[in-house]
Length: 223
Image 1 (spheres, rainbow, N blue to C red):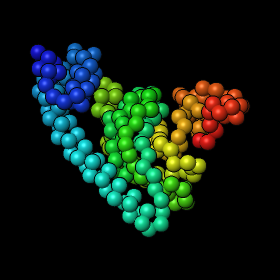
Image 2: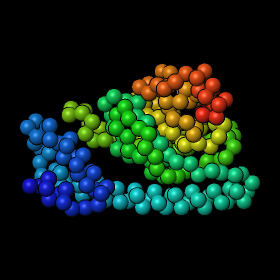
Image 3: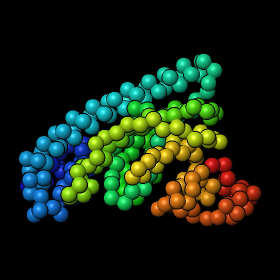
Image 4: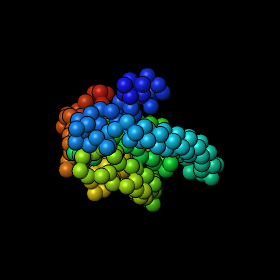
């Protein structure tokens, strides 16, 4: 009854949250009655709704500030480019419920998944030493039955050298975070990441075949 009432009310974002919450709770109804009881779900929903609304408004504000900063930087001589934000989760059992890059919201990423995009964060059109972005992230509270979610965290991550200002791609690992700025996806053979760091993703073709395709105008090696 509670599930039906919930799923018939609210925005698409809220409905997605409810469906996910109820789906996760379902397997534990017998073992975790306190965690999946109606009072708990309602309280979790109220907290989620308030927190999400606050962070969405904050993300919009930061996006506007990013655009203003971009204009100011252009006026000061440094050209910038607005690029989309993409997340990849390399862990097998931890979901990232939300993350932000310099205050701009990125997509949530389940374990061993990623590739969705949000818009946008400004970076210099030409890379220079000393570039970094501030990453804030939060783990999903329902990753494992017996292990509570880790607290949210924030860290400044250096941006490695890039050839062209492509997507800002955030790679989450259990003990580290890596940034890649590239127009290519992780499946591209010239994606600037080692095979070990790339797992579970892997190149869909060889560098040689991609180079040949690029000569014929059917691809690019500029990653």
